[in-house]
Length: 419
Length: 112
Image: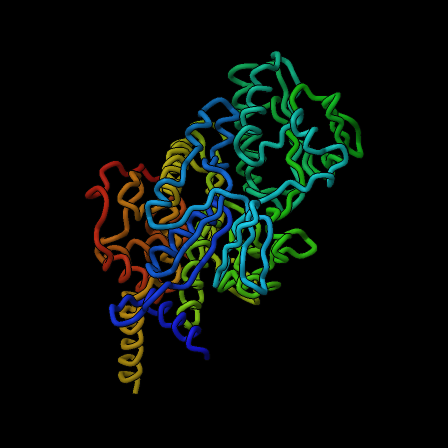
């Protein structure tokens, strides 16, 4: 061990177990790329766990726009501003927030390159880049098409575009939502969106119809969604599974036409949720595999492809854990603990992670899925016997309570991460 | 022999609890996804820091067995062993209370 390495370890140990006698000079450096639920959570957890760790958060946007509850914005129940958060409090924790785009990673030199050429050296790197749209995977769906047929799968302008289109549509129009094959961000998301769009149509444009064209035959919380749809939106919302010709094979933005193997659907408003992959920096860093997602060690979240780089959140292949904000937050905190332990020369302990996802079927009708996960067979696996969805035959008061808890969850997690 | 074994198991549990006081036990970090840890967050969901250890153990065991109605905690508690529940309870009981005192606005739980 060189003197420098020794000092680094010593300062890292001091970071975990602060003692005045230890730790001179700069502590270990961790760079986190991506300021969403995964990245911002990880940066904050690292700051708490290791006061001597120099934590840098690289995020191009000055404002974070949260995806959870953005379906309520589309359905006219909420304003986009309620989804938006800044990094002021994160920076106030003593995290260096760098408003820039990370364009490259040199795993050998252990540095991140920013768009302006600046290089940020790191001892460990955490990538939390979320998703990118796999442009071209669906014939006819490119960035220009998304300006007509919004995906609204990254919250922000796209969310508002879809809402404006619904608001501008005459009563009696056909709205189509195209849902992708697995895996994708937020497995229950397309069905919550369908629910809240149906709620908007039912209350504002009741002669309209909503068609959900699905590239799958099964989806998250399916029985709960379908029971609620039959109760709340009969005759308005129709779900077409893969086996009934639901898979969209191409789109034509000019005519707002979605083509399946079984026919064509010309929509007044079309929301195309396209195939996805890990955010761009994952590929640039060499941590994404041929699937487009990032294989990781389930204890440390360290990439299986590049040592020293950890991946959390939607970009990671996290076994049984869904690509959700809660999961990203849970992973980020486990990853931070593992990174702090590794920097101190220790061995990370086996974590247990949790996910909880609420979906609104109507403003006062919430349902949820929960899970508990632990590493098993090299993957994050479901803890047997735990987790599951809300009970099938619960009274409306229970659904109303879950809608309240859904809102409480959003306030809590955004408060924990950004507040 | 059996007594010695029981004592040894007891010691192990105590050791686990002591460790728990030093660093968060498995699962603890995930709880603040719903149960606020930050003093700046207002929520109807109970804060765990500074709750009585026995109360946490009892709640988790009752959620796990189905004795206590939960919204999601009945599903989540089933993912934790007795030892893990003890470690979580010791950890949260040892945390300083933060944020608003008490939990005035509890959400009514669904009836089973």
